[in-house]
Structures are given as structure tokens and as C-alpha cells.
Image 1: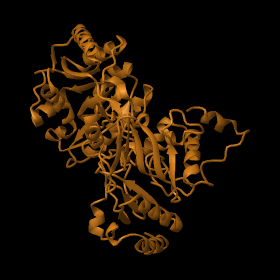
Image 2 (image 1 turned 60 degrees about the horizontal axis):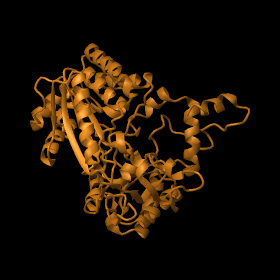
Image 3 (image 1 turned 90 degrees about the horizontal axis):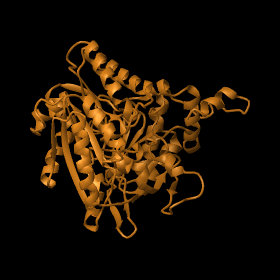
Image 4 (image 1 turned 180 degrees about the horizontal axis):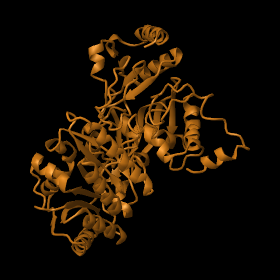
Length: 490
């Protein structure tokens, strides 16, 4: 920390001590260390100051003080993100919203719920279930991840194939902008006039401000839900069955694939009883009217058989559904049983490219001597390769990171993206130029500068290099054809 930044932090702390209760400020270095990372523990930075806010007004007061002293700030909810999106700034303030966990309203007649950013995802559904509704976005971490984090990362989950990502389930947000102003973005009206600022904010990874309250759309619970498990010799057959199911007009609530290595890990961890010797399994969930679900289940069974399914099971009750899901939901943690370290990668490809991409990943894995386990949302092509390594071996970490990057290159080459639902954060910022031109990135920065001209909100995330408004992005002139042409790319 330079003398200038140290003085700025001292002045900031003086202001915050006057504005906030003492218990909200965490200054002790050891206590600040407990907030040094989010779910991506490989990246660790001790924040300059931690503020555990109790109210939205305290969020605004903290951000106003940051703006006044030109100190960066980072918002953090439950800290479950996997891309380093809530990685703290060493010379900045970490604004922790986990104490803002009031579920203000559940209005089943309007299919709405109003929640603080610290409310846990699953709590919204638990509150709405007695009224016949639930909150559809369901990240695998839904038992611990918070609504504010879901908004920042536009989280998805196993059921986003049918129900979409968080962006489709947020109607309005109360937000603290980077200058400390409290504003509302969006409306409960079905078609709001003007620019879609809410759409820009959801998924912006905390670079446009901090959400302090969200009005959420609730979804009616389906009349029937059926979950089935299909075993295949390889991911090729499982992938072709997935494509056939979608092509037949069946839109399952979820289709998940696990390959042999992921199955091995899950069996060791939770004894899930998946088909013995399977090279891949599909977990398929169908929901909707009872008659329709029954028809679709038979169609799915038929299509799986036609594509080499060796064993097919359909759950008959909630307990059997949970048993089928147990292996899939434990897969990430279970990989710790077969490898001391691993990287959870996140990319997405067109569904029809899955067989080619998986074969290429297998080739890379063999050539580099790095094992890769695959657990992913097959229905929308969202890959979650788990790159295994032992950090105690010389060069193993570097080889794993190289393979991880090569997998993202594969996703881009096949028309996909470097992230399917985990965000870019600090982890993938260096990959952005592989996907976007400099003109593309400049144009994105123009949007950011409209909200945050000083770049104080979550700096160092998404973009590969720090850019300041007035320096970058470049000013776009009408005669500057290359920039305009680049801007049209996306």
C-alpha cells in the first residue's frame, strides 16, 4: 500500500467510524484474512477493510465514503462464487451483505417475492412452496449461495435449460450505484419503457454497483416431476441421446451428464449406486402436467434405448428422486476423493458440438497427462470439467492451468463461451481477449463508465487490464470505422 492509498484508507475509516456502528467495521488483520477469498480459494487477497453492513443505508454510506476518498470496493454475499468475482482488493473495502437476509414479501397472487441480497437462494423456494410456487434458478450451491450473488453472476443451475437464468426471474432491483446513490432499476410492469438498465446490471459481476433488494418472479410448482437415470458406454452415446431428446421436442427441466471418472468419485463419496461399469450417465428430470410427463418419460426411455442405453431407471417417489440426484449433486466435492487438488472449469458450447469437444478434451487430457472429470449440464452445453492435479508435484499446477485454458480455447473454437454460469471474475479476465476484440472490450467499458466512471466498483474483474474512463476505452468517432465495426461484433 502506497503512502497515498494508506492516507486514503485512514481518512475513509475515520468517516466510516462516524457513520456506522463499531460492530460493522472489521479492521483486525487476522479477522480480515477470513474474507481473503470466495469459493475460488486459489486466489487470496486480504481486504484493506471489511464492512459487515446491517442495512441498505449502510451500504450507501460505505460506498459514498469510498467515492469521496477514491477507494475501491468489492461486494460479497455468501462467498460461494467460483471465478473470483468477490476477490477483495488489498487497498479497498469489502462490503459484506450476508447480514441483509430479510425475505420481505411472498405474494403468491402476484407470483412475486421481495428479498434482501443476503437471502439464501433455497429460502425463497421454501417460503413460496406452501403457496404452490418456487424460485426457479437453482445453482448447485443453492443451499448456501445468496440472491445478491445470483444477481451479480446471473446464476443458472441444472434447471436453467427449461426455466432460464436469474436474469429472467428478476423484475426490479434496489441498487447502490458507485457514487453511493440509491436507485431502483426495472419495474414489476410487464413491459417497462426506456433502456433495460436492469438487464445491464444482472450479470455485471458487481462492476456497476451493489444490489440491496430484489423483486423476484416466482414460478408455479409443476403438477408432476419424474427423474430418471440412464447408463451408457460412453459420453458419445449419452450426448447423442441428449440431442435426440431435444430434437424430439421434449424439453426436460434438466439433463445432466457425468463421465466415468466423475461417477467413480461420486461412488466413493456417497455410494450413489449408478449403473456399474457405465462410461457415462444421464440424469434427466421431466416436469409439468401429469399426463404430459408420463408421455415424455416413455419417449425419453425409448430414445435412450435407441442410443445405446444399458440401464434405465425412473424414480417413483421423492426419496428415489433424491437418490438419483445424490451422485450428481455431490460430484464436485466428491472429486476430492480421487485427487488432492482440482480446478473447476466452466465453459459452454453449442449442444451439437458436445461429442467433438469431449473427444478433444480426452485427447488433451491423454497428451498432457492430466486427468479431467466431466460433470455438466448437457441440455444447454454448459461444461464443468474438473481438471485434477497434485499441487505437491513440481509443475503439476501449471500443467493443470494449461489444460484448463486449452479447454476454454476449445469452447471458443466451437462457437461457445469461456463461461456458462460462473462468471469471468478475476480468474478468466485474461481469457477475454481470446473471445473479444479490443474494440469489443472498449465498447463494454463504455457501458461500465456510464455507471462507474472512476472504476471503483469491483476493479480487476472481467477485463484483462485496468482501464480508466478518459484513458480507455477509446473515444469512438463516426469516422473511426474499425472501432464501429468491432462494436457491431456483439
